[in-house]
Image 1 (cartoon, rainbow, N blue to C red):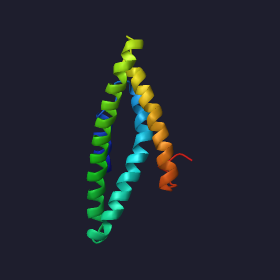
Image 2 (tube, rainbow, N blue to C red; image 1 turned 90 degrees about the horizontal axis):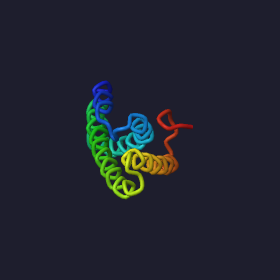
Image 3 (cartoon, rainbow, N blue to C red; image 1 turned 45 degrees about the horizontal axis):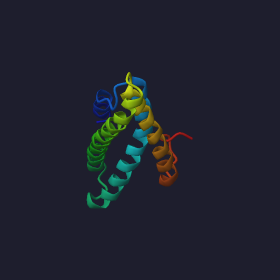
Image 4 (cartoon, rainbow, N blue to C red; image 1 turned 90 degrees about the vertical axis):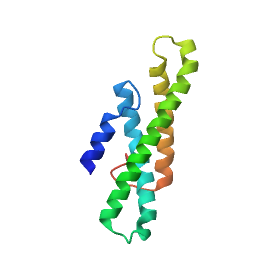
Length: 124
């Protein structure tokens, strides 16, 4: 399932610029991991701690959160690009994507400090 999930995630761009896309993804995926990890953990008593079922739940939750977050970020980039287009006529979506990247970094640092998950998924 991990290969399928990586294929799905790599084929859906968040923004048009590949560099900004990879940076946003790099800070976004740990937050998605934390949310999926917590939701799967909360569902464990209901499925009898069955690891196969929990893997399927994790896959579904992780993929759903990714698509919802992707759409939210795309909408935020679009909304931010409207006022930016008044100042920069050439690349308003790129500048808007960089502004959103900075916002995602701030949120990722906040999530890292609140989640108390210190493993390989977060930077040290």
